[in-house]
Amino acid sequence: MKPAIVPTTMKAVVIHDDEALVRSDVPVATYIPEGHMLIKTVAVAMNTSEWKHIDLKLAKNGAIMGCDVVGQVILMGSPTLSEFARRKSDPNATGDNAIDPQQFKVGDYVYAFVHGSSNKNPQNGALAEYVVVDSATTYLASPTWKSVDPSVSSIPVGPVNSLEAAVSLPVSLTTAGGIMFHDFPNKLLWEPAEPQNNFPLLVWGGATGVGLLLIQLAKRTHAYTKIIAVASRSHEAMLRTFGADDVFDYHDADVVQQIRAKYPDIQHLVDAVSEQSTIRQVYKCASETLPVTIMQLVFLSIEDIEPHDRRDNVKIISTLIYSVTGEEVPIGDYTFPPNPIYRRDVARFVNFIAPHIQQGGIYNMPVRITRQGLDNAPELIDLLRKGKVRGEKLVSVL
Image (cartoon, rainbow, N blue to C red; front, side, top):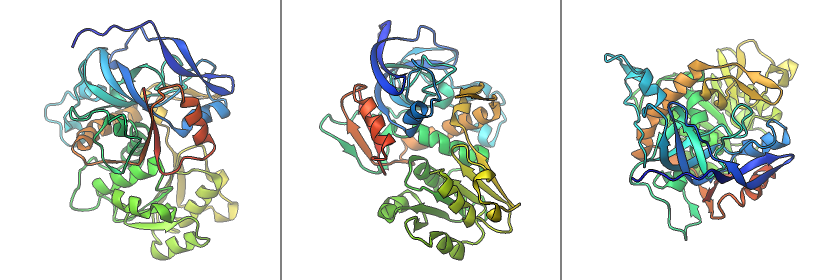
């Protein structure tokens, strides 16, 4: 492959006051840190984090937005192995430490999570023509994956087999991996014969991006005796395809009572919707006597549970995918401290799961494709803001 000719400026979507703005004069990165890569973007996917960073004023003017990107590697930092590979120095390592590392080179197609709308690194985000990606949070695409035909406007549920399907994964998959293998934590085992935990998992918001990937990971790693999904009944067929053993409809007025009657001893629960109303319902589904951990994805706490429902056996925790940087994370007025253990565990997960995705072991959710590049990103972000996108991922091809 010939050396890449990289322009000095590019098109990117940035935060400008209270809106997402497409600009064509954004500087392209001139320095690629060690263990990072510069990619030329093929497609991007949209997430709720984009509009939340705007509406909640979590980032500064000029920050490049976006977290999901797929593209071709055109420049390498050094070394060419992921951080996890660099840390793997014991030839007698077993278990998680013995995972074969991904190796990247110029010309590879990769898909990655990027901390877009960042206060620490505002010059980098996924909604751009050129993106710096961190090898610790980057997945190597299969060489057989290509872009779908231009006439294709949607991709159904199924094994990942295209670049547009791949870009639907990074944020949701990396978040789910952190929850499963750092926060709970489970072991990185592919389809073991026996369940890792002798109790079920409940995922409230099973049809969300994170919910669907959690269900798949829990099933593929046989982490629990049962996987219980709470979502609209209209998504039941998809949820069962992804690995849910039982599905409850959150529209039912007595849904909590239904769950408690059938599963009285749930110890791990995930609120993938993470609103005050849902965390209160999830809390009521938890075991009344056994130790319980509830994962929520924003900043909810025991203070959001009504006092008369609070129990000493239940703890509520949170996850922050942005901690994969291993550095402090300033968001809004608060700065989260560095979390190198989280970074280590997520790097191990990425290296573990990437080849299984290539082999068809992880499915993408339904994908809706647009072909206006970055120009219609503000419109797509607004669709997410207004709640007009459900059960599918919006992907834009550049």
